[in-house]
Image 1 (cartoon, rainbow, N blue to C red):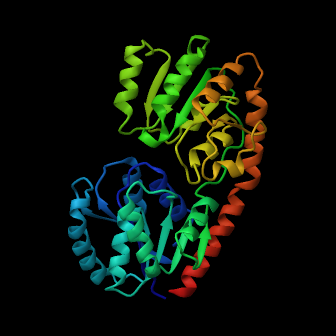
Image 2 (cartoon, one colour):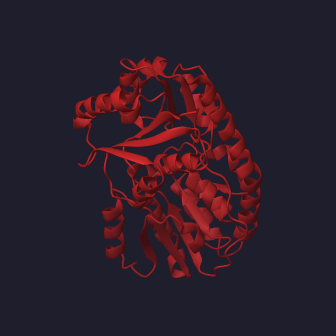
Image 3 (tube, rainbow, N blue to C red):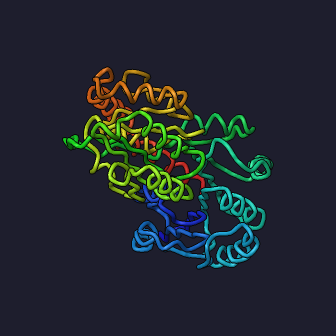
Length: 355
């Protein structure tokens, strides 16, 4: 029997959570019974884009950088593409691609699935537009219970699947002796990396044998760099950029910090727990459901509490190794590959059945 066409529509293939999550679920077989076309609005020239191009049918609508000013142009190009491919199933992720897929739904007949990652929106117009057009979507996939709750609050109560974009892979800890404090993720305003840098510096740990590493890229890179130069911290703070295999550089009991204004699932926190890190985290989004304060991690509700907890680490008032081991045990049990695959197979079955 000839396979039906399916499209995964996404803004670009930058190395970020939603995009890497797309690669994960496709590689694990979400659309294995379809001809898969990954359609991106703009070209990015990342390693992720190269990997996708090798494994799937990759279609780039425009070679220029993504822009909201091109939305009408994207829509016209998508209309032509849909006429040619006649997809039976479309999965879209990230706001602009989601809105475009819903607009296409008014003109074309296909099963529409939106993958929701956001719990908050900076742009109120985007939020209202999504809320008004939610009825066009047949299914929702959400990456966390908190995102699912937010979706219900937005007024959408139809069928949805919860699929955390993470499962454990590490079998043994790295016994690296370098004392590391680190952050993972895009360097954006909501992550508050500059505040973290200032607080770690103020705690004095950088002068007690610890190093601070930021794994990630983004708009706040230059601000972090400026502070590092100004305070002569070049040998103590590393801006490592994006690293897919950053866990290999982290030892058991290392200190992971997340002080985001809000989070959904926070895959980087789960990965830090998997690596056996002692996680100092702001209890936002899904984090407060899987981190148990003072057991497998530590809650920090303010920069002052972050500083106080950092100061406790050298004196062993916080047993970072014991907390790290408990963090690993927790995610290994609740986020196993077997459980992930079971949820993914259920989604695949329902989508195949309804197409």
